[in-house]
Image (cartoon, rainbow, N blue to C red; front, side):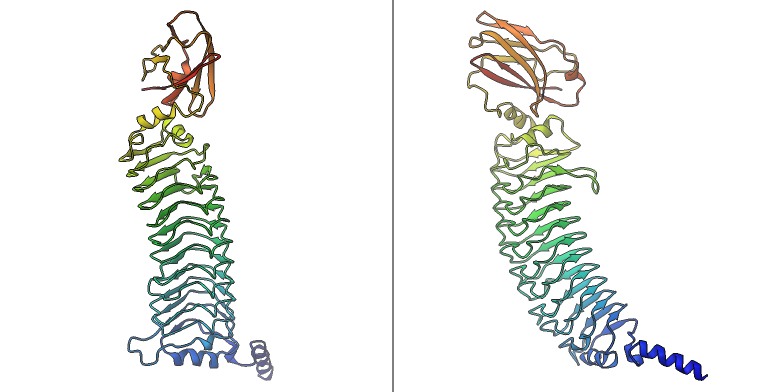
Length: 439
């Protein structure tokens, strides 16, 4: 018996000398006195292995005013919910470095600051800040580096993301919505958003400056009334889809110049969606080598020039998802855009001294070319795809005012899934390119 008492005393000494070093299994704090008692009863509790819920009781008999009772806690392995409190800041969590689950704030009308969380480095779940959260910035989260699941902020008073300067990684979705943000300047080190980057109804945001270090995101979804362009996304090189919808002021895709690859590891197709952006006039920033499996281009009523390399290449062999219409003249149908694609090389003269027929043609049909007055001597004819690759070349000797020749049989024109090709005709003085469509 004496040996048992000595062993028990030794265990208690390792635990801090008394049972006050132990941490209970679950916490639901709905009165300030409970938080105060926690600090007094468990002064050596540093790692809480359970969930924390801080929510003032409905009768408001003892509102939660501070978190000082948690001053020694550095790790919480479960989630932390702060709901319906009377907190003004988060002092008391000053030692907290690690949260294993989510961290959620909602309906804390007096919480004007997140100060007190400066030592928090890691959130294993989501960071959720609800619409009735009054802080105007993210100061207090200055040490946060990783959020393993979602980052969701919809705080109606937040003007700035200052305070998230050390955030580098979001493991699932990053959703910012319904906030009067002027900029994204608080995210200079954000490198990866593993799933969706969603910016919705950020009514004062004019560009995406602040995301300069973002290299990877999956679907990018942007719906912001004041967005003028996409500057700030210059280092974004790959993703799954890009959706730009209902951006009333968007004028160009400036900022997407380096986005060159749709990836398909999460979704079966990579698509560009430009939907109801009434002032969009310029899509020339699209990377010329961008390969798409889907294109939705609709409701961009002032967009009249769509014949850029990325779109021309897509329409030459369209994917399963294509919707084009209700844009400006020249961008209303795939045929209109393909027709414009044939005059985008800068080599083409303004004369119309050659023709290729039938056009469109069907598999097995012979193609003929007619050369008018301006072409003379040795005339080169090239069959070219819309990426500029030359598939075949032959020559016609022309010494007459007008000549028609049947082109040799090219089986790849019949067998290829590509519907758009170019025939480029040139002599020493003239170059013309004709788009031909395969039915």
